[in-house]
Image 1: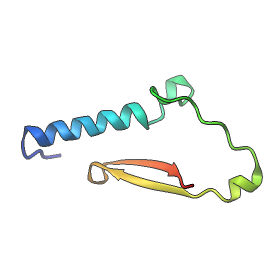
Image 2: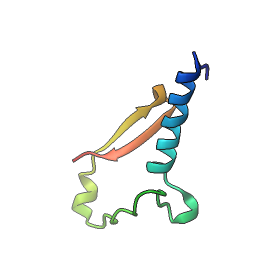
Image 3: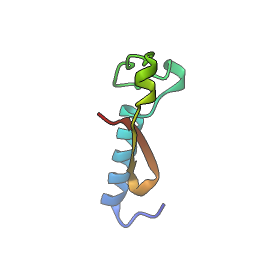
Image 4: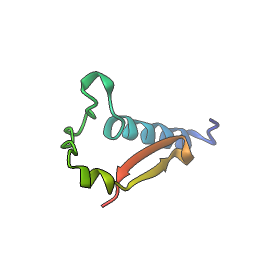
Length: 70
């Protein structure tokens, strides 16, 4: 990845740190994100059939975050 200047580099580092600490699951701690509790599991078959997952690209598509749409 090429950076135009120091501000661009700092933006990319902050964006990655935000993704790493707030969104990305961590395998070592039961897939819990460091700054958020685990969500409740979905066990109802009707709810599983209606899941609508949306992807959000960060850093121009280098990072991907997935969320369930409301």
